[in-house]
Image (cartoon, rainbow, N blue to C red; front, side):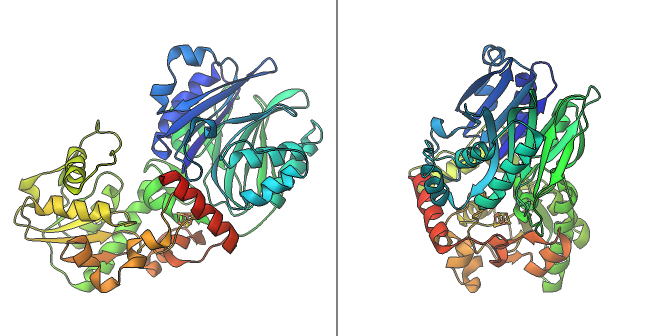
Length: 469
Ligand code: SF4
């Protein structure tokens, strides 16, 4: 889970990139970086922390130029150290690159590169992508770029959307490419002065005042230069499978993807959940969202059921990330610091608590305890996605199967495990009928659109253990 931005043709591109990265901060709070190109020289600054912590005015002033790429990181592989922070840079040929995604065959790429005398230095999987690209870039013409991206599509398995800056035909050029399955998102847009931008989500372009033109087509390479039309070439085709979890949980509700505004997708999922809930015949008094992701779905569900929608929690905007707490009492306090229930909304009521997803089950259990502390009559959990039963190998940080509560605990025990009176998940059929299809829904239905071998799974799981160590 990460976010990227690429900009070309804008004065003080680093400052613009920092603004756009702030709009993508929800995609990763662990580390961030910006690289610029100015008069043939590359300038990079990256560090652990959020965008406003890492990039002050002085740091941004040290990154001159009208072309930049930036990145916010949430580590899915590697130990999350500074050396793994993006963007990455290689000198010969000069390539600056960042990405969002997950490469599933890193060991294979490392040995392919080693046979050519190239060593991968970090645990960040954009580095092998960049090195394969650089190795395939045998000249500085447009055709050379296409050949290099073809090499990446041939060699690199997994899900990835990448942005790079290179000098092509003697001009700084912003390059973007997306794997043929299009699992991870990517959009591009421009402003009235002919500048171009690419980003993980359209909200980053909104923040810059750019018009979103469209998505980076899966299997394509894009070359962007200020004042020139975008060059887009589809190099490899496959049936695209966009990540459904982006729509459910990860992306900002005001972002627009191929299937429309995320807010609307969540609204539609909530309406469908309401219909499925009604078929169960459970009575309730009030629909309450778990802030913030589930708000549109909860509103739609309430409307479908003809029940009042109420905010039952106040979210503390300043609590930041939840720290790892040593015991259950402290963890409960930490959650209460973040979300405080409003007794007048919940007390004595049959409450439908709407949330986006259940992964480990620990958060939902603590939430139920929190609601129960203000004495509702009943607590019913309604989740606007199906149970997560399979890990993700395409860039969303999910635990291994044995940590997924819906895979571990029999369905008959879910309500008791979460401490609620009933649990209703959206059905897989309901998700398919409502959201973009075909899509990657592997974490829900176990159908992985991009093959992942047993060896690749073992390597990814080992890397994740490194993350949580
Ligand atoms: S497995 Fe789930 S989280 Fe991963 S890409 Fe597919 S839908 Fe998204």
